[in-house]
Every structure is written in C-alpha cells, then in structure tokens.
Length: 312
Image (cartoon, rainbow, N blue to C red):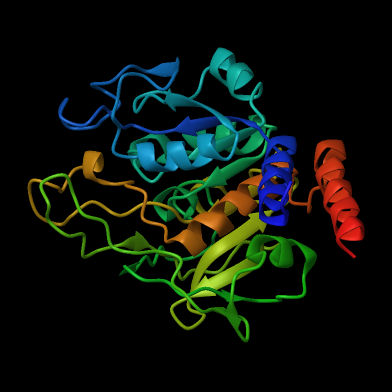
C-alpha cells in the first residue's frame, strides 16, 4: 500500500472511531413543499425523509464523516414533553439548526427542558437561539449583525481544544487564512447577501470563547460546561450538560420569495469551515475535551509508522 493510500485509510479509521448518533433539530420541510415551519410539518423525531431539505448539505457533511443523523421538529406551541426529553437523551449529540423558528424558545418554560433536562451534549448553530432572550447563553443585547465572509481569530491557538479544531489549517498568526463561511445561491439562483447571523454580546460567566470574527467583536465558536448558570429569559437555569456554539447556515433573505425560515440554513461553510465544524462536532460529542484516538485510530497510526520504517 502506498503512503497516500495509507493516509486515506488512516483518516477514515480515525473518523469512524469518533462516529456519533446525532439529532438534527430543524423546522425544515423538503424543498418545494411550502413554507418551512413546524406547524405545517411532522412534529417529533423522524428520519431523514424524502427531502431534499434546504439544510441537507450539513446533514450530508455529517453523514459523510461517519455520523448517523436523525431529524427532530419541535413544537412551536408547547414545551418539550417528558417523553421527548427522554428520546433526546438517547442521542450522542443534539444540534439545533439555523433553520428553526425561535418561537420554540421564547419563554422560560420552553427553554427550561433544553437547558436543564437535556443531559447530552448540545451544539447550537444559530445565534437567535443561544442569545440572552432565548436559551440565555449570552448576556445583554441581543446584537446580531449578518456577515457573509468570516475569518476566525482564535483566542488561544495553543489551547488543546483549539489546536484540535484548527487541525492542519493555515493560520496567519491566530487568524484563519481563509474565511470559514461563504455566500450561498438559492434554488431560484439569487445570491445570499446576508450570510451568517453573528452575536456580539458577552458570554455568561463560565462560558469559553474559542474563536471570534469581525475583528474580535463577534463570537463564532464557544462552549459552556455543565453547571453554567444562565441569563436573560433563562436566568437562574443551570446547564445539565455540555453546550457548544459553532455557526452554520445562512440567514433567510430580507425579500421575497426567500424571506422565510425555509430559505435559512443552507450549508454555507467553506472547506476550511467544514473541517473546523466536523472537528468541533467531535469535541462536543466528547463533552468539550479533545478525544483520545481510540483503538481503531491507533491501529491506523501504527500501520503508518510501520510503513515508514519499511521505507527507510
């Protein structure tokens, strides 16, 4: 086996060793089936469905990395039930998508189960959900500018988690050489000019800012450990598990026909952004820690070492 082939096999083994059962939380309906809103869609846990969904690009990214992904469409009009919470806690990771109506998170009664009863790790890709008047992971504001291209600056590139997320991507000092996000083209061929919704408000005490954009003004990647006390609408609530933010997906257009939640959440990451997102998913599954290679990954590394010895 040649070296490039072995490197590919080793990378695949490493990805497989970190494969997770992920729940993607979204209001999306299949493209062309009407305005995407959970009052018109199937509420509850369901599989990938017929599609294609506007946010299907992110699902494909996750499944291509070896993860299993199911979808969940929460109700806009009632809090999570005990049965739904029990089902959510059977997954390795929950990801709240960009394309979800914020009405599911408007009151303390609605945010309470998400923050205090969901014990499994959760990642939010949408600042309209993590902000102070929803889940309460930030204080003040909310202040949320929309930006198409986002070069990420890491607070501490030497931090083990940051180093793992960056991987072998090119940095200029502490800032990515390439943008993590890009403009998307809607199905009607019009160009997205709003981009990603950022957040410039402070994190609650205990939160860890990992990467910023907009000259340090906005938080792009962050994490919160279990036990963090929250603010705003969720004031006094305490996180029951690890939480993370990594922003993925465009904001819907300001003008028709792409001005509904059904036009939000298209996969808008560059190749560098995709690589960082997938590594952040692994960190989230591992409750905020850099994962051990695992026996399968170690076998791939050992095989690489053996081949290098033979080539000497």
